[in-house]
Length: 182
Image 1: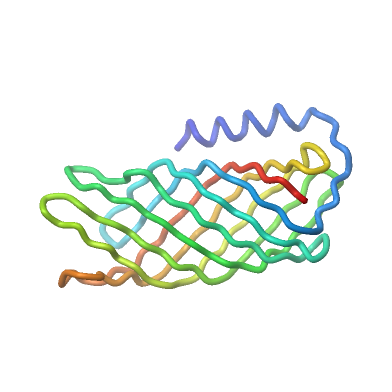
Image 2: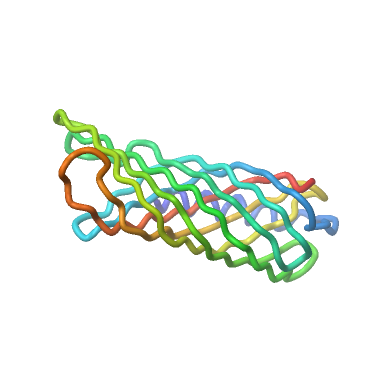
């Protein structure tokens, strides 16, 4: 995770020196992200790399609605394959620091799925819960924005097929993304 964080900071630092025109932040946007995903439960914490898509609509410079879909690669260890997927919808509140940088916070509802397979087991755990996140947008051009974000999704996930215990899971996502503002 340290390599991921250092890469994100290096990229942001190199882009900060670029002079950017003021961007209109209202309207639709859509983008993709590379993320570091961590799954925590009462027994263990595992992490890996994943990808995400996000998009939304900013009604004005401080309020919008956003949806985020992200998934992980294999987080498993010791012969198990474990993957995570989350879909959330949130209102997003932005504080525009200056013409280039904006900070945001969001909270909303999420649907999560965890698939565990290995040793003859193939089980899906699914459920609904809450998600919250914070982040920073940086306008690179009038339409391109770079984003650094941290999202947390919490909820009780229930086994779909077998007689496994349900578990309270926490899924964290640290991501760097790029989106196009229409």
